[in-house]
Length: 161
Image (cartoon, rainbow, N blue to C red; front, side):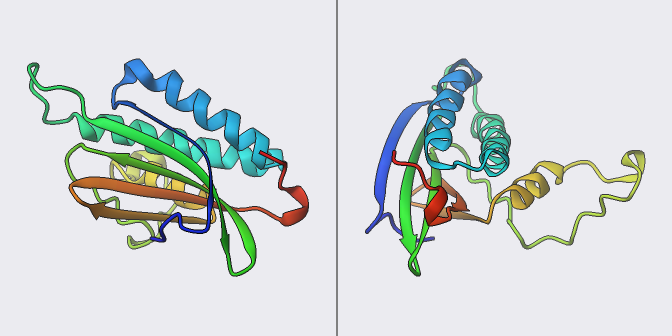
């Protein structure tokens, strides 16, 4: 995973990782994605991957929480980063929940032709995320899960943030 050095942060938010804040997280990312990604199809795919990721984070972050525990914290930031002369929109999430490594791009390929009732449970959301963005990564850094969803932006379609 790369640091945001040399990138331009578009914005960030932080709130408890709970469904009570779902709309807050979704509205924040949607606003920035629509301003930066002009291609509606690519913007939709990034938003879809983000919604799946946030859903998984909220579910996993609080899986072992007792009633007395506070919700894990979830921070989301968006940045434009230049890699090898090309602009990328990077959507980074960081949460204080239990460690959850989805092993992006490491599992066996999902057989989407297999009938649903014959598939093993799980993995479809990870597959959806991997197929929707250009790059995805996970790191465990200082007790936080850190995920990055990255979408290449053609210079001619990048709108001014």
